[in-house]
Length: 341
Image (cartoon, rainbow, N blue to C red; front, side):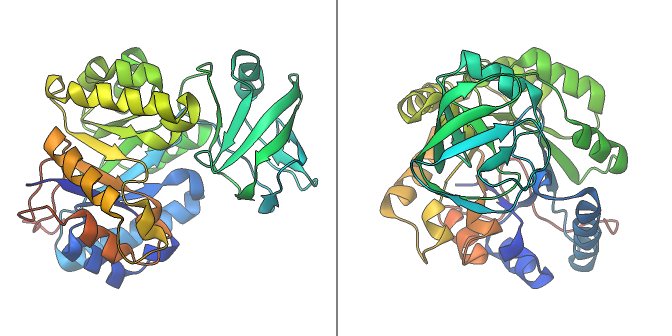
């Protein structure tokens, strides 16, 4: 079985030695979540990755994950939200007011009206219940507590209202990053083929574009979206947060029943081997799910926390590659550069 492994880079995987070990363990591409990096930090990462590729002669793609229309929290001091506490959410990019979270997206506050009134933070690890709202703030009570940090994703359950498009930072990244063949882009929260067509027109035919399927409309319209993308990722984290876990499972199942109709590479993302973030080996359920996804026809997997903040990013890549029969995989590849990069 040949398939690809996209490994997200982060604090746990920030050294050249780790990158080399990850590729030897099975990683075929690296991913950087630009939402968690400043423009200057992104420059540093890319400079180091350029040097790494040249030093070891690898055709290793790097995928820059753009925020797109995804909502994220602004800047604040990391805090543990306790169950039962009332939290105020305000339309600003930064705040240090206690029990207040900044959300720099005006459409979020309009979207509350059309939602199920549950707010899910960081892929539903923390959940709030809306008690009151207007265009200036939202008051919500914590019903599932936990630790929350800046720039984590924020989702409204049961709602699909938002303003689609690239954010200001995304545009700055596109202007800053040259059209290098080894730099790919993933677009978050694509709604439909029309939106993806706009991104393709904006970014040109030469850029490798990944459409992230994180909304019901995107999953159901995947075949049309694929006409404007080079690859698709089924991202179960935000899909599950927005639709609820049972609905997410049904959408993912129906998507897998029709994989053969889509002619572009399809990748599975979202807690693929989540157990490896804090433990040395995957669960048997994860191993079975990995195998079943390969047999279903997925071209590869996207590892997130497993390699970005996990205890053993090399081991996570090795575990993800356990069913692979050769280093070459459908989709993205690791190989020797013929002309120095």
